[in-house]
Length: 185
Image (tube, rainbow, N blue to C red):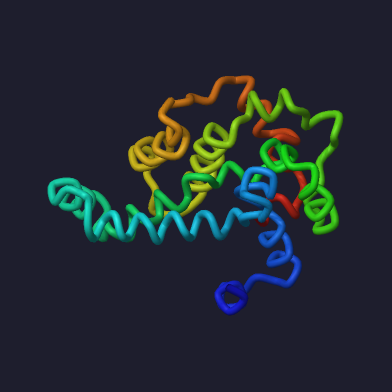
């Protein structure tokens, strides 16, 4: 993992931050923290196995037509599904891990990012919203493509969650992380 981070040109501070973000807390993970990045990479690897052994040929053909390399696209979409967990609104839910985050510069204002914020700015909805923002800023992603991909992330728990004006307010505030440190993750 360290070699991959280094190859990507990440600084030691950025690597520390990524190494603090949890996907499953120790409390919910059988006593062991499962890092968010590990969870996302595991999910992408399983998606490749699903593609290779279980996905209907018609679905594979359609994704190949749409994305060029359907297998790679499928693995990416599956892997990115929990990107909304890289937000204070989600990360605040495990107090034991919060101290490590704060030490790495990924803190939040406790009176602002609350349990209610976490409920209102759930990780699936946050992920769809934040991915939309990132893809709009990336070259090569037209609106039609962004509109097609983002609901897969925001709806990965079975309910399509459209962003409301209240959500937009959260997204531009502390719920997703205001600081430069949060923006790097």
